[in-house]
Length: 99
Image (tube, rainbow, N blue to C red; front, side):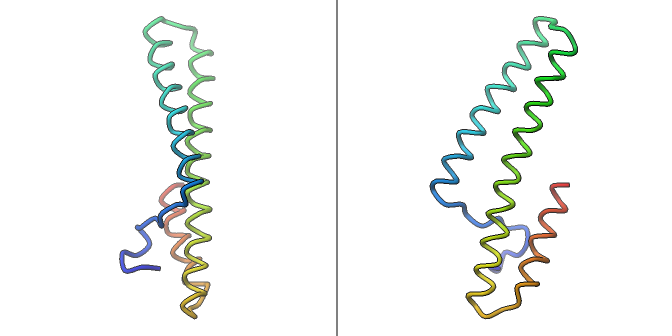
């Protein structure tokens, strides 16, 4: 991995970045919807369902980034003739910060 260490998330490809940005814009809209629901005193159950949807969407964004990170770490480590276990350790450190 590069000199910035395990805290550095490798850049994502254009296609993945576009997908992530679309997901994040959708999440942004969902959060604005949550704000409206609270302002409108919508039933608790409806609000909680929407919160669960936002949570699931955020987790999907994180999983996309994490899977990209793992692939990047492994590819880079193997390309430089290093030990893949090093890349897995670095990925695991990042993964632990998420969970």
